[in-house]
Image (cartoon, helix red, strand yellow):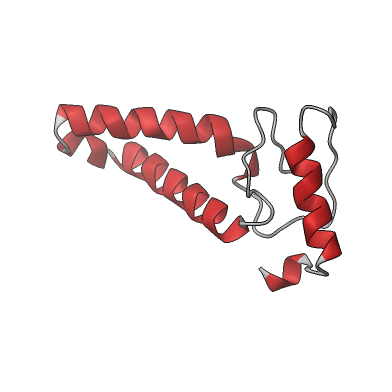
Length: 101
């Protein structure tokens, strides 16, 4: 089940295609690390890519398996995560469903 347990990224629902492209990039970085191709890069470049991978993992790691916009979300702290509520309302008000993304 996809989850977000850190800060909600604006556009996670309303700009899902961009978020999904960043998730795909995260998966590509992980694949490079696993295949050992990162070792072939200059040290500084490999270090920067590893740092970016760690940052993306922290922000997007819980939604790697999310292939489309969910039909429902569960928000624990509605005051702190008001952006998530606003995005969900925007999608429901405009009549967009997950099929349109």
